[in-house]
Image (cartoon, rainbow, N blue to C red; front, side, top):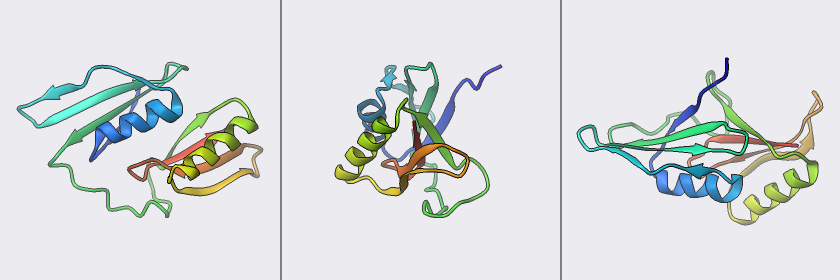
Length: 129
């Protein structure tokens, strides 16, 4: 058994798509649009085969959670880059490009080398070696 995909609601799926394509080498399908529901989505596929569905519908309210705090439920998506150097480089690039780095890069108590950043819609991402 495997997780088929994870989905995120978005206020701007084009900006979110660009972020994951640009920084995480995702590929995407053609946008799916359901005009009756006012719904649109992309599936982003990563080199490992993992998929992320990003969806937009104007009637979905903004997330009320504070992105700087931890909450019950899904809290982050982790991307393994393969080396500490890649974690350092991508974290530095994201910070230079104006994305918020919440933590790291650092070695965690359980042995991971990681940083925590926010994507354009304030979803938490862990970037690991």
